[in-house]
Image 1 (cartoon, rainbow, N blue to C red):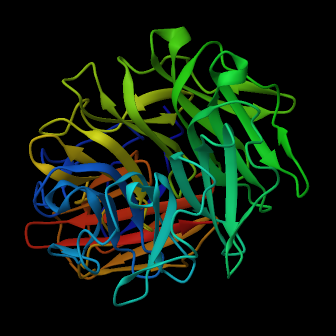
Image 2 (cartoon, rainbow, N blue to C red):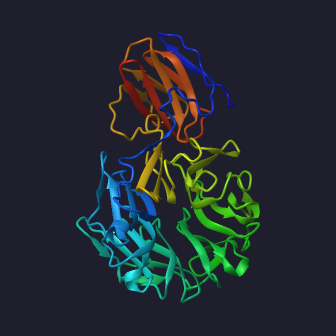
Length: 457
């Protein structure tokens, strides 16, 4: 239990409730809910990839669309429905290994293995009307597998993949005219499976992969401006791995997640602490084999892992690291059916979303706790919060003068910071000891629900 928070309430006394994990004030809260219609793709969706438009904060999903001969389709949620972005099935042929990402200006790009171009890598972008090629289609030297797209801090698109001609990991970037190699092609020295690409805050591209040259263990490499070098020892995992992911914490520390063959094929996360990789929490923390694992940090800085949970009928499960342990985010196996190709992303308000392909229903997207965390939903707020951002004290005033109000504040990970019945019109809260990040405020009574957001500096 963390320290109880001091709440000075004017006009009506309250009893302060200390922080409790996964407090529920109603059965409908703290659960995973469908975003739009279940199976909105109209056909089986494979290789689903989820990303948020940084300008509009709308979720987009790209996938291989069985309703259009397994060609590429991208859809977005407009607040009410999932709608096509351009024409469905826009790629020249069948695709696999999709990776959707946005430029800083909010332009959607998608990379994939292009069966219409001899199984090579292709990237397309949406120009506002249609999907157009970025450089030449099929620009890789040979067959490209595990294509992964990311934008550098400078706004340039990079693609990482395993090139079967160069027999190893390759990264290329688009220089405005053509795709060029970043360092040496095939720099891993052997086949590199499950490649994941991310940029450090200082702009260095990093990749993690299952390393054939090192007993199929995890290896991370970075480009230092001249060469690709290992980050820590090569093959640092305890045993063989699968579904490797890399992401950077807000403070710039690289983390990797993977299915750990040395721990009953369960999930393990490690971070780099010079000069070695150390385990984050317990190794093998998931209850079963995590297929299609997707790893990301929340805006508040918490690591999350989403995966198809083979221990729960192949349904979706999400876990996060908090208080030195990995805990479930909502129920285990929360999806109604199987959840292949899970893809995790966060809205700007910190709401976790998961996209996946249901083998019977098609594409599906779910989000956690739309009631409490979904402040980005267009709700009218009767709250005034000031100063905001704040470091020490913050004041919350309500337009509803009733003795039946309840004030609740949670962090971006869903943990209750304050839960106070009997709230009336004004509260002054000491937030000095809270970690920096985004916190969500909710005030309810019999007639209204008001929501707001606190930024703790």
